[in-house]
Length: 392
Image (cartoon, rainbow, N blue to C red; front, side, top):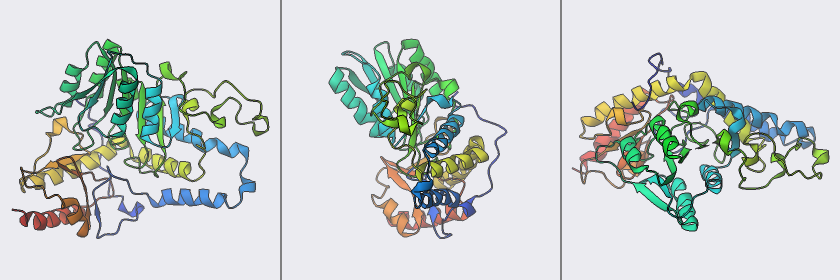
């Protein structure tokens, strides 16, 4: 079992009217960067206009939006809001996790081959400074990442650092199985959900990870430079990456800030980035999360899955294949070309025709969302046929 399907989930009618995407643009690249909704832009504008009159911004205004953000994110991951910290990037959250995990010489840190760099560099440094061994799980010939990870995670494994799906082609990992294995061997499970959360259902309650990070600008449909870290209860007394005033006890009392505190605000707030009360970005991300929760993640997943299923069927007629559906996160479609058939310039060539995708590794990555239409799919294949005909 890779993922429990919600059989009651229903596709969402096209929501393109909520975005500023021209009819002539086929944007199938949400895994690169999600577009902002009109309402998200409006939330940011309100924050900017508030700064026109800073005398109207009170100390009490520094906290409600960030607390609302914690609550919204906790609902996305089925976890408690006390464990949520606001961070500027996935790498910030991963660095926080690495700082608080003790590994020694002979311990193993398990990652995936071709994993996103932010979830590699931090563990390379951790291995170098501790004497631990960084172990790469090789891409399995049968695309079964879960089996390969479970076989690699042994009694010497101290850290397993993973996504929910591979960022190049959507290869899916059964995190419930991996979480169970980590608990059996006493390993920390650190997850980067940037390429899945908001489009792929996830439950921290079921997986029981130690740390979760997620950038806000992809499938969360929020702004750049703001995201989340969730920390499990057993890790919340750790050391933050930085030391700022707002994470300390009684920081709400601005007049008393010179009464320096050694204690922190409750939960994972000690791990918050400084200046997290961003009056522009936080309301923008909050509005995006509110909309995602209103749509329902199961319904979003059903919508994108159906769209990708149609694209995959047409792609097969052009000789392009992909990871089998039962081993793939269905919101993600990595099209694989026959040997020698993938033009190096294909993403740029498609962009010239108003079609936007990514090439990652040896896959052409198709990642639509609820704003895509049947015309977008037709636009994609009309352009593909022209481009591929020139490379036969």
